[in-house]
Length: 353
Image (cartoon, rainbow, N blue to C red):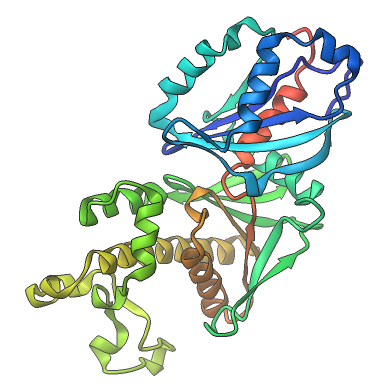
């Protein structure tokens, strides 16, 4: 971060406009001097009060209070970093709120990403948040004993030496990056089958309306009623190739049979959709890690928000198929790194721009 003789004017925002969600980070200064307090215009005070005193904005805006970073330092100022999200389709309402709050009257600039620089912001934001830690706790974590359901537990992890890493960003779609340093990375590949696919298919198959509702259904479902497993074909394990009988041989393979279709629930369909999307991402990520000769695989993105089913499934897949050589790593702030990187762009912008 560049330190200014005069810091950029408040308020400080960073925004990441995704295909499904808009992610907004807001830096709330807590070291305001008496002189600054006296000079601060009422509109700025109003914005700060509105953002920090609410946890919901309208029907769909949410401040993730549990992710707030407290008493952190950015550009020589001390404050709290707030994390806010709302559906991209609600962007017109967000703009209207800015008009209602007279945001345009403030001499400020909001940095947003969502263009070809979004991956720059993603990496920069991720490395920054990992460095500052999560209120004294590590940002990164992994699952110990991922292949054993009963003893699988979440453990903190140190990401002090992150390079090289394979960064798997799971949003509406998926981008996979090989990252060698903060400014040296390449996009290896991606897939259009991501979080947007999961939610879109669940809306079609189950009639649900939200990501939260889809995950709730999936948590109660049984994907083996929908998917055809190895044991359904071979009667057990396929030992010649080391395939367990419980492995999925054909996603939605049972749905060719009318009797099977008549016996499944919406929850089963949601669970099978989640498993299908997650397994596909895990398979592509593993192949990329092998091809790029990278052993550290970091999964981020809003698909993983409140989605323990997928994080544990990814951890298991990385561990099992690599015979313990690959470890899946996850980050607490999941889908907000692009917005944090955009905020850092604002703070690195010189005053005369």
